[in-house]
Amino acid sequence: MKATASAFVVAAALLSAACGEGRAIFIVDVLSFIKPAGTDTIHYNVPGPIAISADSFITPQKVSLPPGLGKSTVDNVEVTAAAVIENTTGTGAIQFEVFFAKDSANVYLTTPYISANGTISGTQPSTVPLLPPTAVSLADSVFNTDQLWVGVHAGIAKNAGADLVGRVRLTTLSLRVVLQDKIF
Amino acid sequence: MRIGAVAFALAVLVAAPTRPASGQFSFDARRIGMGGVSLTRDGNLRRYNPAYRAVKDRPGSGNAKLTIPVPLGLIQFFHDHPINKLRRDPMFNPDSTAFNPVELVNLVFNLPIFLEVKKAPTPTNDVTFTVGRNAFMLDLGAAQVLVPEDEFGLGGSSRLLDMGFGIKGFRFGVQGFENHDIAFLLGDSLRAFLKEAHPADTNTTYDVLADAIVQAGVAPTLSFSGRLTGVKSDNQDGVYLGAALRSYYGVTYFRADGSGGFTTGDTLFAGPNPVTPQLDAFTYRDNDATKTFGRGFGGDVGVVFISGPLEVGVGVNDIGATLTWKDTKIERTVFDTAGDSLVTTLVDPHAETTTKLPVSYIANAAFRMGTGTTLGGDVVNNGRGVVIHVGGEQRFGPLALRGGVSRDQRKRMQFGWGGGVRLGPLGLDVGFWTHSNSFADKRGITMATSISLY
Image (cartoon, rainbow over the protein chains, first blue to last red):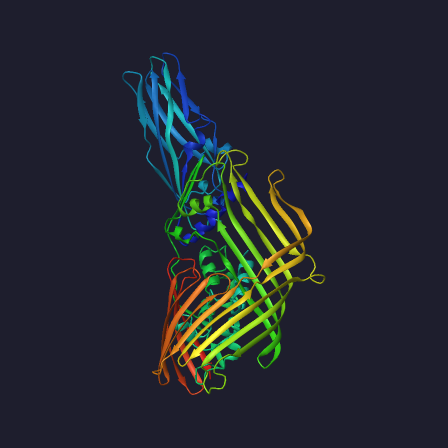
């Protein structure tokens, strides 16, 4: 696949080299890669009357990027993400975290790149937005790769009372990777 | 790769004098200062117009016996890029962070024989790739202007040698001929993708069409050139005719045409084969030049009319020059997706094929006023596009001022200006000309300097 995928961007890369000292900017819609598998949504169902915590992780998802990124030097990276809690019953709090890694085994062993917290309270059902700040990571070598793995974790803290049932749904997850000139 | 780049660039530098007219079209600063036009009956006219064989040089016309270019550009180049440090030079070292492929391409397009007083700016805009599982878009920004809309490539014909003897206007000789042409054309989908930032589509082929040919051989030639009118007058006024009949013996020939690129799958960035390479090319080559030649007949015609200060000429070369190659091997090469490899099959081991030499021509005019002013122009097509030059020279005793314009093969207007001084048998000339040879959308300016011996 790598060899054939190379062909797809060869022409583009040759011309992108024409940008001289200009930068190459990759805008990657990560959500589009993980949505078909249904992993853009984490369902939760924490039963029982007592306060309790639970964690839910999606299976790490692969994001195929144009070959050549692996030979480039990353200038800076911006991660933009947004999610909503669509809660059915119960109250509590949910921590939302996004991870990136070069291989699937290490996705959840790293520090999350972005995180946000949402509190579920009051009359249910309700929708709670999760809007983490845009994260900027200078020259992060995780992103100079043509195969990126992404993971999403939901940390659920249930209050005493009704079962906490609902889902966390990603609405935006994108990367803006700025490379120095040498793509290939 | 680094060594290859250095070797390639140096090879091109060495081969500089053989470059076609589309590049630095002359090593004569006088001609460059007039936008490329020649006001003398130089080799270019005699190359394309056989009638000029019968026209003698105009007395005091300014034909130099020898013109030597002063390669100020090479001096500057090797000052900036010491030859003993070329391997570590960022210009030739892809591993260097300062390596810029555009500068290397510009160097090839603009060999530094003469001084580049204004370099065409290298585009420095950002390029944006938008990538999704089923989306891919490339925005080249201002660099989109660099994407060719029409066919692009290089080519031309040349006479490699011309040996012979003549008597009373007739001449028999043997000429070597060579013709090469490489042309590329972006497919519609690829052109829209690159030039218009059109999103990539699934199940779509993005390809480049290519056609290349190289052929060479020798051609025994019988020619005639003579003066039809005003034979007994003491001036050069009159009509001159020239014609040549040529029998071509093609010694070698290779041609390839086809397309190459890739075809997208059902999804752009997912699945085992998101894209499939695509190549389908036919190649043709003569089997054995020692057994059969590529045979054909063709000819040249030309006419020159001179009346006082006015001189007009037209010459056409290689009319009807179609070569028949009786023993050609035809092969087809395709990319086999199953085997992930190139597969070549024999289409015909001994086919008869034909090639054509492109018709090239020149039309020229010059008008010499009695006030030291000479104006001239020419239209030249060496088989790959028309180039137009119009220029003039004004002499003030030993001094000369020159200017001119031209339309190059890319149909862009270029400008030339310059001057010179002649002291007896020695002349020193300076010429400036704009050019669009760089990988950029703006013109550069070259300053040419040459010394002429009269």
